[in-house]
Image 1 (cartoon, rainbow over the protein chains, first blue to last red):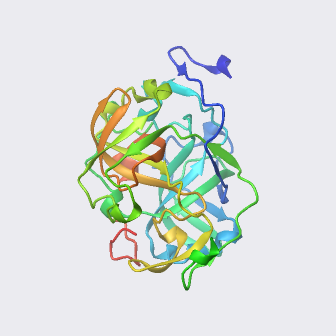
Image 2: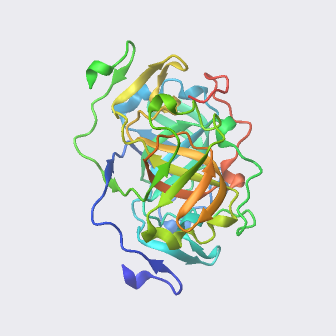
Image 3: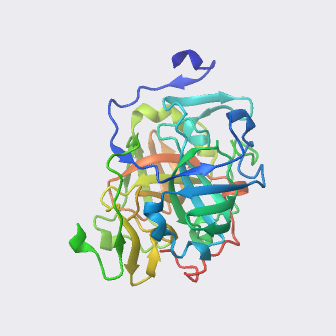
Length: 162
Length: 162
């Protein structure tokens, strides 16, 4: 994939083998079929998206309906994983760990979503910005006491999300 | 491991194979060598912990020092993965996705940490509660604009973290 690298970007050599395995526990359904259609970030759309959980995990939803907000982890399975420095129009030239880009050694994305409703193993949520069909990895309750830091600053970004 | 199951807990049958692989990109160093030593949650300790990043990803830290807070993803590699309903003294009987327990199909944990400093590929942070030696999966900038939801409620918990 090295032909896709932009001026100023740096690729690293990834390890030869994975260290652990993950399960896709469901799929995320969104209105966006291509990367260019996706909103710039999770606050960029009020679209209600759905999370279709594999029924084998149905009982694990017990209590989730009491949460106003959830953390959703999903796998950006189409992203390359070897770039350590990336260049974009929005963010300039940055290290991968200073970005929320899907391109990273483990392309695990995180979105904080508002829970709209649950029907069976389908959750309706607001706050996702990923491609339709994205594999789901995890759902967690969002605890304001530990997860909300309104005063946090990303110095390079002027509060854009990148 | 079924002998370890508690009254009221439910195990599911996990898929026969993993769907994707992940890399351990570093290790987290904390003062806690056993599970019982770990603080109850990430606000339970002001200990400065260190994140030792694999040097192959050093360039990916460019820009991270401008962040006051980071999202750290790590792998709870000692946790069983098949419980969909769990019972604990603190949380009662809950579905796995209503809990922050390490026991989940993909034992990927998330902590929001305050960045204290970076020296080479070692980050000093406050806000971790995991075992010493825990494998690191990812570091992300924390964007208050999308990640901070101070009004979020977990109805079953009375704002404890579980």
